[in-house]
Amino acid sequence: SLDNITIEINNHQLMIFCYATLASQDKQLQFPKFLYNKSIPYFVDADNITATVEENTVVVTLPFNALSNGYHRDITVEK
Image 1: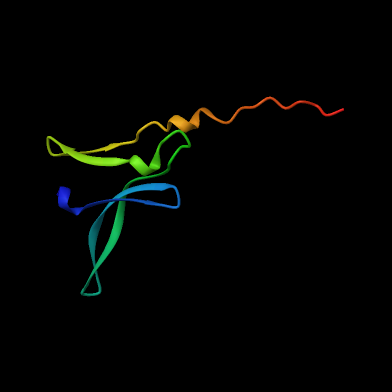
Image 2: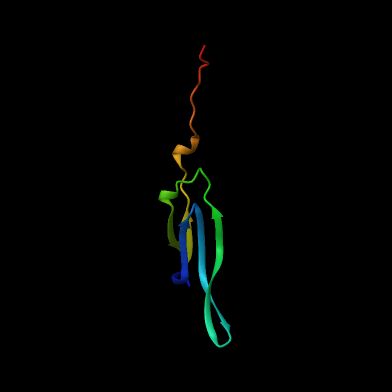
């Protein structure tokens, strides 16, 4: 169910998971079942990651970070 999916960012890791129930010694235990767990690349704008539902499917959008083109400057040698 889409209601059971959790999406979160923790320490630059994008995690998508749901909880699965396991029966052990007459107890019901819930543990995360990871669907996706990867580092967010430098070229993704982590502040603007969004999730939507399209035709009963969760779509996570990882927008390009315009600042990822890097820092550049020429350095002159002091004499």
